Image (cartoon, rainbow, N blue to C red; front, side, top):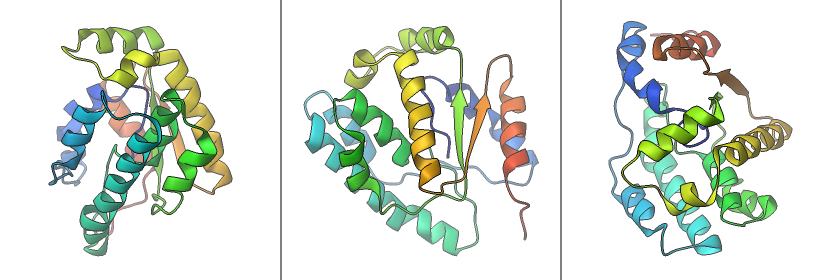
Length: 188
């Protein structure tokens, strides 16, 4: 649900209390080890091979974790969705049309939220990390933000419902409030 340039969304992870107060349950969504292995293989697997591996993991994540939760009547929030590929694989020199070929059959989300932050803030957060991925080192906050905007326009043509939240000068609770204002009412 919340793609954004590397470092954009990090501070919203502290907002679980706000979400819980709004009667939402929060828990990590990935019970499988594949995303960890993919992250570690990013340094050695590039281009098409990496794009296909990420797409395969995304489909497994949807089938094994997201759809069962939706079938149980729950809302699902995830940051591992097609937008990430449509941006990061482009940083990895892939063409948008080829990346979309691998991801076009994903279940469209009810809503996608793009979190945007000032490029200098994102850069400082990335530089504070003990280790940065190959794609984080290859790209830049400015480039990723531009690619996310292009991705948003592309997915709008695919009829995906999307919201952009400008996180500048907002605390985590304000960001969550802006997101929750866009969600449909929960029906128990």
